[in-house]
Length: 63
Image (cartoon, rainbow, N blue to C red; front, side):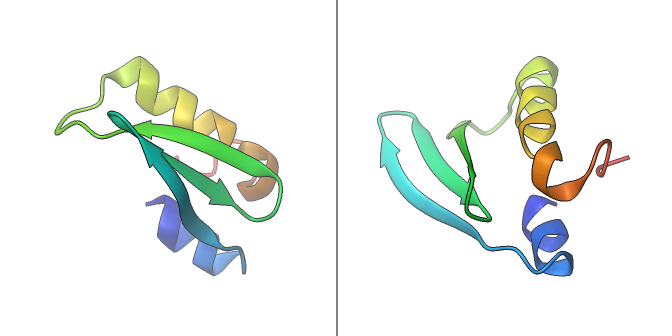
């Protein structure tokens, strides 16, 4: 979801590292997000990840 939205907006969505049970991803040039490596991510964590990308992709872009 984030990858396709980034592509549509001409932004890079790349993994920049991993540590333990999380991966660090960068969106564009300014936003870094830690994403847990679990089969399921709880609703609050998912919303926080999506909200962290709003500065680059626009408010509520995932709706």
